[in-house]
Image 1 (cartoon, rainbow, N blue to C red):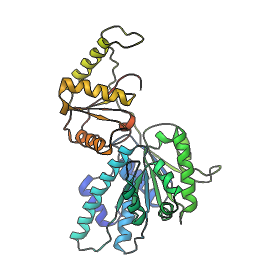
Image 2 (image 1 turned 135 degrees about the vertical axis):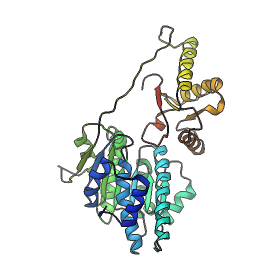
Image 3 (image 1 turned 180 degrees about the horizontal axis):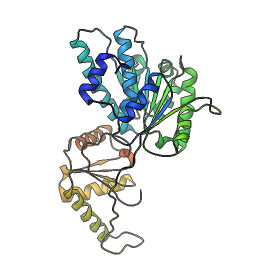
Image 4 (image 1 turned 120 degrees about the horizontal axis):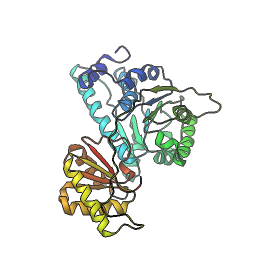
Length: 348
């Protein structure tokens, strides 16, 4: 508690009660501005463990009237859906903390949150450059585009903290390599070397992911690893059509699959169904809607408009639909509410 501003800590206790292991073990090093990789399962509080320290710092600076203009916290996520989710989840606590500070008679500058992804309009991008938010939520690709623009790049020189969510999903491929180059460019242009925080699911090897996070040569940059992962029990079943499989799935076999999925959806409160292609997502959504009713099923993939994707995510969280059929656009870390069954149709 002594690590944080009293009112910020009061808000945390009112909202959450006590810290999770990821928060208890991660906070001391983050307060000391040590590059840190936090590994914890979904729901382990790792995102808040990173953001709470950063928010506390911004609130303290705001109350002392020394909050600098410009973006100070940069949050990177692999998916637009996750970025949208994080922005919403940041605005709510910031509004609650602001209300608490106002009630106590404090004068302060509001902390602004901005979002830049492939869905961001030209007008919104121009606003982000003209009035940079204190916290910017974005993706690796959008960060690269910002660094390629002199005006946008200038708004990033004030960044003090970089948070990379679901870093294990980036460390494995060329997207991660590309992001590493952007991180090094940021390191070079920022006024102070940014604190790097990586958030990971329980994937191994953590030392390799930590090295990927901090970059540099020959281990010159240290990274603290906070590992609070634990093995969860999983109830996994493989279901095949009652009709013998062949090289190409027949209409009769597909009808059998749809029937089994329909039964599973009806037996559960809320179901998330993953498929491999956008076409398959549309097709299965249509077939299930025919059986369960149009309002019971939603579709989610990268080619849908931003509004349709956000509507589907919102309905899923609120429990307004029985199931959602998605591609990898929904695979990482968003707050999916009351899901109690996940299905994968065909190979993952």
